[in-house]
Image 1 (cartoon, rainbow, N blue to C red):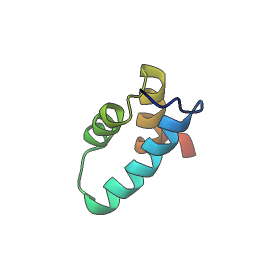
Image 2 (cartoon, rainbow, N blue to C red; image 1 turned 120 degrees about the vertical axis):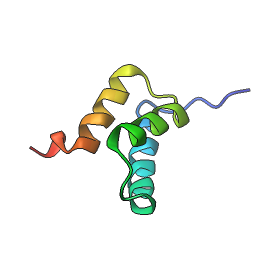
Image 3 (cartoon, rainbow, N blue to C red; image 1 turned 30 degrees about the vertical axis):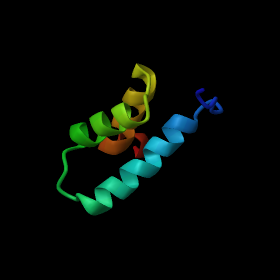
Length: 61
């Protein structure tokens, strides 16, 4: 039986993961970080793109 998660829970977990991953692997390429998070948290293409933009710093500009 699978657990139903609220909308956006996967992306929230992925963003938290990215922060932890970056602190442990400061030299990791953004594409590697996003790919790992997308697989680990089963992100859809839109969520993956959002996360990629966030990791590249495009969301802050």
